[in-house]
Image 1 (cartoon, rainbow, N blue to C red):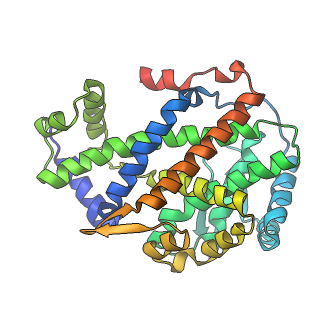
Image 2: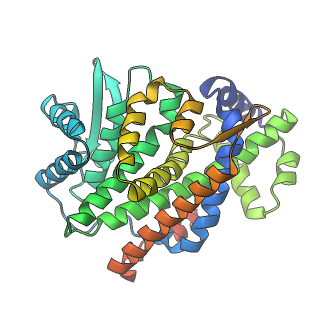
Length: 341
């Protein structure tokens, strides 16, 4: 196989598209590896049916989104109301489209596909969090950390619905599906990080080099197929922000549970996100990162806390979901589909 195109794309990734990636590569791979390790104890999460059975009207979706935002931050609540009035939230009825927040016409804009189920509330709140910290020219810090705050807002929305005894318990499924989706990102990040490491160590890729580093034959074939797919476009690390985000979101959420006033610190960091360096953002989040030969690693105490809080969050979400939904919720097995493909 000719790896020239893949090598060129890796050069673009580490030199142009993301100048900090090489510095953070070990840190991200460490997270990916432990994500896969923790998730093996909850493998049936990967089999949860992604469809939702209960219809939720547009009026109900909007009402709950506004009530939730009012309960956590009245300024954010007013901004959400203003976004509605200014038509900065575009209702997209095409189910093939995706939700996103973008900067256009001198302002922030939310594209919001609506499927009339409870996931729509989470989708709107997730994108509105991006809306709050998006600038015309977002910084690298914002791009790395923005998903952490959007995922945290999803967790806080889940808390709000639980506290208010919201009758549609499918919100528990939405939260667990977030963990399931990040499993795929972790696997991709871990595998593709190894490819980049091979390239960085040898200044080239070859079948021999890849075979030497991938003992498992299934992994080997998958990696070679990925290299083939990435000959024209490199998407190795498109989802790294989601993986980093879910760990930090779990850590922030557990700190809020222990000390509700901590949420004000979260709002402060969000407001300053575009003006912070990566190091300062970690510092504000009380996460110590070590710089060893220009490579970043988590301090042991910080990392242990992050992994512990992630494990607690996942276990709690899993137990609540299992307490409400029976095995009928495991149709359309995702893991079987992945194995088949």
